Image (cartoon, rainbow, N blue to C red; front, side, top):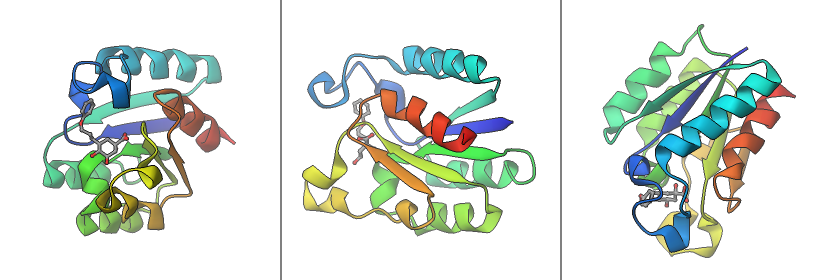
Length: 140
Ligand code: CA2
């Protein structure tokens, strides 16, 4: 089983900016955590981070017929991107959406997610552990 982990804009700043909201785990640490959890489960993981909406769409297209699952934190694009929504719908790969913070309890503009309409599950507010839970969900 192969899983693609996609992180949207600014997620490479994890652990550096706003630790009160997003915690102190860095992006590099997070990749390590996911890799080791995936190893325990016998799953292969690939990572992709971009600050560009089109690049994320391209990566989702590249996953077609190659990946068995997608874990995505689209970051700010969660709340705006019909293009990412459409790309996920087009490839039809089982997808779990992850947010480190509890978006439903934050500003009203964060309470809309176009991606959640095509995700089999949304995990939010569980910190970086949410990515591990997403992996478990896709392995079910
Ligand atoms: O809670 C999440 O994981 C978010 O997807 C993070 C996004 C935010 O726009 C979403 O509404 C919720 C990105 C936040 C800004 O980027 C940072 C990322 C890591 C550390 C600091 C800032």
